[in-house]
Image (cartoon, rainbow, N blue to C red):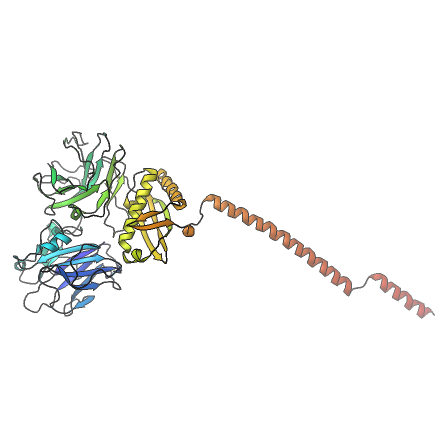
Length: 536
């Protein structure tokens, strides 16, 4: 994924000619910035004062992209006049959109937001509206100029999470290079992460939380906190104890159950909320009082989940993407961390079967089903202008349709390499649906065929759609067998025609030969006449 990696909004002295913003593609390779925008916001009026369209640009071979003052070194990819980046309280926001939604003097928006940093170099100043929209529930970052006698910046050191202020700390400047983080805050995955959350449907007493980390890692001073979605407040907090086991997993049961390590925790009602979202989070503190609002301070990892997917903003959105889980039936279902898909995706969890203390059950490329759809729409403008949003909405509709058909436990992470184009009134969609095992793969293939054959229209983000046969290419064995049979018929026909032509050719040659060479009896008659004349 692409994110903001370093911000240097203020330089020592009055020159203000070495300010810069550094982006980083976490895939650590050259990355096309088509569709991305960088917007600078003024904290006093919460309006954009500079808008940069990054389309047509790309990162360097290490994934870095630099926007900065024209006189600075190394040379930025996009040059700005000196003193362009304001000192604060202000904000830098990274967006993705295929339309020109972002203009100078436009009010701050979360539409298409990928990452953001709200900062100040002067302690008393605030930017409450920027914080509320871009990084809700968090605190403004302070670029403390007392950190060093040299120039300093706000550098990403603590996590690769987007829209998370606590990921940054003040360091010395490192444009187009590795951030100069202290060894204790080196950029990388947290020491302890949520690996799996099992939510029981109905009356099934089968719930657990599984953490992962390096074997022997202590859980002392760490808390597991549950948040309700209505107000985003903590409804329970559990101080952890013990260490990560030899398998790298720490699993404990809830509702009075026993984990494989003997941990006994009692906590009721952590099933996915029927209204809004709920969340489970790991904090590097031993005490989180009940009723405390969710915060990014001391946050280690978090997982947001819901029964009813919604595009509306919630109190827990800043903790990460919300994962929809099937809640209607009574079978237990897990959200499992899965290392699959594109490096650029924010999704890290997939709906799966519970695997307490074992390797997570994740979708695999080996069980992929190709997806090629043609959909008829009255108007392409929405699909073109809001490409990313419509693609995500379509993904949710496809997953919902698939789950309704097979009830086989799928989520958005099962959709891989999805993309679309829209020309005229035809939306062409391509990608893959991965499965966890062959049985699920067969169910997905059955759904695909039924979906393509369905005459019923459906809606994606208010846009009416209907399947079109234009993209359907027969690939089943029956089609191949029919094609083979047809080919054998052509062989027979060609053989018959060829044989007739050969016979005709032979007859023609024979007739020609006879014409050129008269029969022997004529020669005999001539010879006899000659002999008689000679005798005479």
